[in-house]
Length: 225
Image 1: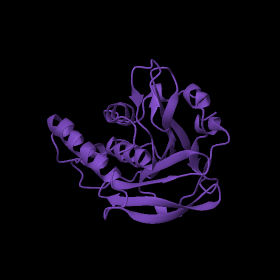
Image 2: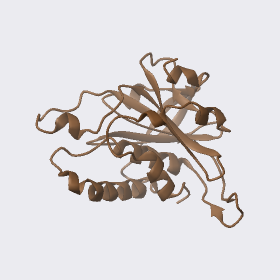
Image 3: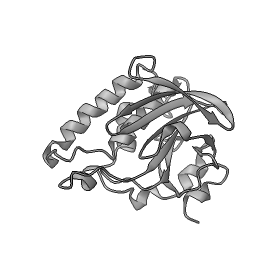
């Protein structure tokens, strides 16, 4: 599978519960990226917020996420003991730079290529970071997360498989095919753009069918500035 390293992806896409930490909320990494960021287009009029970027050892940004709507919390915090589903409505967009196989900065090895599978994988793991069955004991979460993360990896490696359907959504105003799947935890989609990046997205409480994506013209719109 042509994608970013699972170790790197898991470290940057999975946070241990709760709302996004303040460490995520710096715009510098986004501004230093050598590729355009994608978010929901102007049809979305709700709140926008920064999440995190991931960079290589030599500081080159490879992918990152921005959020729209409610900031998600771990699902069990809303459902445990209440029997009620979370009312959060959010969509997170993941932008992944398109890279072929290339040498690492120190020249000692190769960095894996990225593809639309990378965007699907990161989106799937991102959704898991805000998901936790309410009936599960805290001590079992790591095992559950590891299992589900492996499942997300396998699913992302088979975008032509039966677990995915095709959905056409506008990207910069142009109808673009996306791979799409739903689960009890939310939805995930992934596609590629004409701008040379791959776009993944995940969400809950907000229908994916009405979304559109566009280049973020001013990242400060996501900082609350």
